[in-house]
Length: 525
Image 1: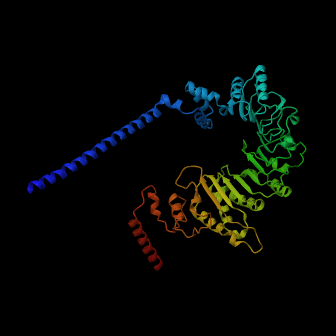
Image 2: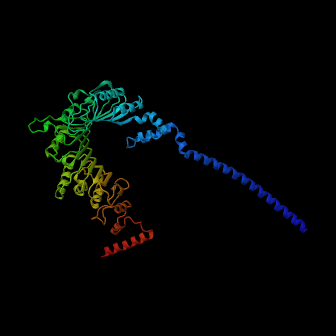
């Protein structure tokens, strides 16, 4: 009987052993298959990583698209660097027309080569430096410009006294040309305006002292809508008279003409009925006169960018200008670029507020650039009194490149008042809107915030409070973080450890309890 039991047990063990052997065989087979699959993947990865194979495995179309991204880099020689890597890349760069649509060169032969590679259908942008040209090169340049006349979208020429533009380009029509820029490399050089037929030309830049003879008939002046006149070009008034449909004007604030002389009869007032934007660029010296404004009437003017000192160069100019124009300025940018002695800080701030109140009550977006804390103090005080009617339509206020930090309490009081200005409008129906955007950026790095707009979460509709313990301090990152969380308590001792890691939750809770007890004791006292 015992022998039968042993035989039965042995049979069960043998059956179990057979099952285990079968499972092990299946596992060995699966391991073999996995190893083969792994080897296949490794071989594929090796083929992709191999530098000798990868550059030829990528389709030419994809390589061209990659090179197109390089073309938009700041370095104009980026395409030439790709050109010289290898013969494969050389051929791709040479045969990709889109890489030659933005041309920067100063040699006529290269211009002809690059323009030919661009094909005959793509729009082209050219920036050409004429340092010196022989008569043969000048004729060759004319031929290239006319050969691709239907492709040029923008043309920019830097002209010197040793090289002049071809005078006659009217043999073919520049049907795509929308912008033309002529820049004199020498301020004493007159630029001869070429004669060309450009039915779509609207943007013109003239950076020179004067134009050549017969410039009035070289272009279709009536179709120009954007004009940049720099460096006190002598024909500035005549040019404006030839462009009655201007919509944007960029002009040097030290612009002068013969009419500026005392012994010369004054020139008549000129009306530009469609001009919406007037931007004054920088002057070379501080002897600034109101200049252009005393000769213009701009009824459609909406955007004005003007230096602070130009607003007060001639107080008798602004009032007649606004009375004649009767315009509604919507966007105002004031450049507070000149330093003033501390004694003049209050007068400067007061004058700024007075001018804004008198002439710019319709402004919706105000930007002050390079302002100081003194400049903004009076401005904040005026903005903080909604009942005064100061800039009632203001929606956006930006203070850029500030040179000194602004006391926090003036910012908080102003933002608190302007956040509810729509609710405090007078019964007479004075138009008032909420300030929805406020930006403060400093021109130099420091502990102050780069953008104080973070102190509110939903525009300026959030209650930011007005009772803070650090009213005599300047803005720093810790304060803004506290305000953004809606807290009204701030420990000044934390200023010294702004770069340290925050304390644990228990330590913060205990600190808040101690501060609450301290506050209650102070109230009891």
